[in-house]
Length: 289
Image 1 (cartoon, one colour):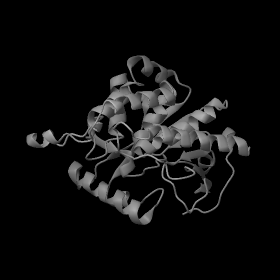
Image 2: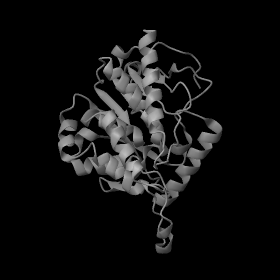
Image 3: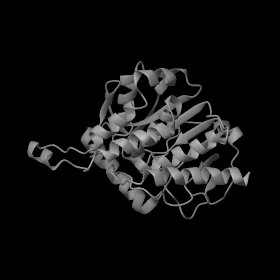
């Protein structure tokens, strides 16, 4: 793991990557909103997975603040995470299965989709494809196990175990999708974390949360491209500086543990606090310049 701090030079950033993390991604939304308020422009390339990909999309089609307002409205109308009645039908029905698509649609309607197509930045999203030997169910189980092991033991930024298990991360451009519905399906797929949300078929093949293979996804890069890449993490690593260099890239992590539950989607979920932490961390950067 890296241990050296570094300076953050936003004018030199050509690629901005959004790690996944559920509600923790509102920290990213706050950081970037603060930077945009200061006059910064999004770089030519955005990369993201899971909820990080959705936050990046909202920045290109609407605004992170609009997406936050939509999220809060949906959470306010939902009082439970799981529908226990679904068990009588031998199904697992989580609130995320209707809340997440509704939230995505709030900034990827046909009107918003036109903005995505004409945005000055390309958005590349990371999806996990099942291991051929394991199939979809086996890959989801293996990916979940790898995620838990990494979270509890390894604490790595770019884990290697999922690749050893045969999971494959694939990068797709949101600019290549033909319509708003295809964009929404793709965003659902790259955030489909079992058991909360179901895998989706993308280009005729099953795909699920890109975070199963790498929660902070980066397409293959040259040394020069790494130098101009900033990765916005959502986990807090206490032993690391807020901004640090590693493997030729720059990483920015929350200044503290993001004060929100990753998966909660009920009234009282502290998404505002996560967003405000991002605003404060972004403002600290401005003060340090």
